[in-house]
Image (cartoon, rainbow, N blue to C red):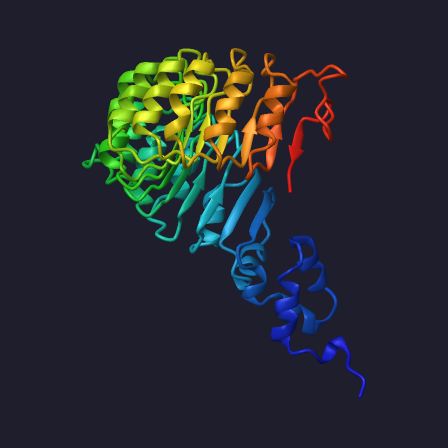
Length: 398
């Protein structure tokens, strides 16, 4: 008896279609009525994010997305009101507006005129017209007015990305953290908060975050030049925090790392790359109070072999170490790493100009090593390690 694909039950077809990429999912729905019905099964589209250009009205768009169970949306270009999306997808879980430069507090306010209890993830990165007001209304409209909008209406939000929203200030973060309860209750369930390149933020924002966002797990403060060592005192007692990014925060020094190490943090990941006031003393503090770290990034910091020596004996959990462009690191530092950080799976040595074949040979003997970055490291013909080529940036080990 001949068996044809048309004999398959719709449930089996749906299972097969679920492995296709998004474009092919749409194509199989155009083959025939049976395949269309199978392709519209919600299991086929589970976890898919719809990427939309909102230009002209399309009455069938949102009913089609809802029929397939799609609840995650990225807006690639916004030429219609954002409320058009919110009204069309009342059960939306994730909304990515990254790069929608024309989005304003007013537009956000019209969209979030009522609570959206299903929304968990909101990405407003590079929405440079958003202010504190929007954070209050989400919490009320994205200026400080915008953050008020967020804090007013999105109480169950778990992830918020405000990268390069440069009008956002301490006032807006206060809205998010519930510091202005008369205006907004806040987004107290936030677990992931990105504030990268929010230039108006100061240590007061960190005080608000530490008091109001007790569930926060991941905090990205990279390129926030207004925060300082004093702000680290506030963060040092956030026991739920497991990842902190302070990359290129110019006012963070050894003193700030001391404050973090003296608190109750249980950080798994810390990035202080390009903080040029971080030196060997920070590594001693990390070994004393942040020894549970699994990932540590120190690129372009003023550390030396002495700092490595003060740190490595306590860092038994460390899996990833990024020390690229730390030009004071020599073979002695690599030997210390090879002797004590035996669980390392990845190390970045990009631009470490004082290392030689001897140090590299020790590093490549690490039993768990999978990734080694050697970009900008120059070897003479006589120094080349067997099996490696100097012009390749990354080496992967099986």
